[in-house]
Length: 242
Image 1 (cartoon, rainbow, N blue to C red):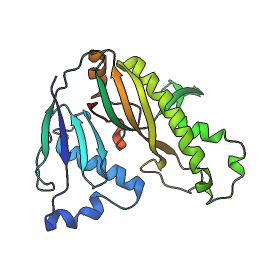
Image 2 (image 1 turned 135 degrees about the horizontal axis):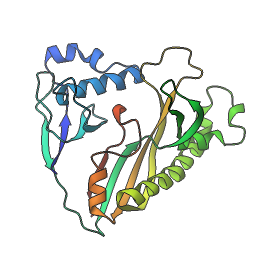
Image 3 (image 1 turned 180 degrees about the vertical axis):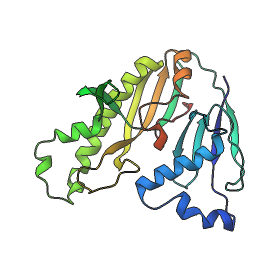
Image 4 (image 1 turned 180 degrees about the horizontal axis):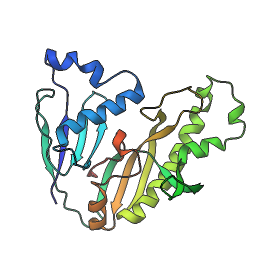
């Protein structure tokens, strides 16, 4: 199956720029929700369409998307840069990668939901590991920088282990992986006090993988890795290792 890798960027026209505060608000939670809706505008061709694309925001404000259909052009955007994405892979191929992900595990929460289903919760691996640091809860508010080295060390260790488990199911093994960044974000739409806000972790991993099962990898790649795909996570960018 041919996929499409696209670079999407807001137009520089006065009309598009006048809408920029609404399309890309400064509040991080509102921004992710707005970005998701913005990208839906070039992929959703009907009210019943289910999301069939992954996306991530780049540092220059553009978006990269991997989709089953090419994005539709509109006046809000500069001409999309679209190319077919149909990698031919064999066992043993080595790929350099970048992955922005929400690395979680699912646990039973006890009890039943209103629909009668067993309640479950999603635990962020890095956040959970950070909670285990002795004395972490005793640090005064505003001293998060004191934990930065420990946070990145844990993000590296936990992220690599999580990715290795992903690879067991998705046809690759990890040769090298490191955490380039880790942070938390408030779930879009949350209203209420800052304390106790529902959050999710965003982990940037870079490194190199080796393909063990090309078919399994190419099935998983457009589905993405981890959760929070609606908010810019899950897209693995790959290129052949030099």
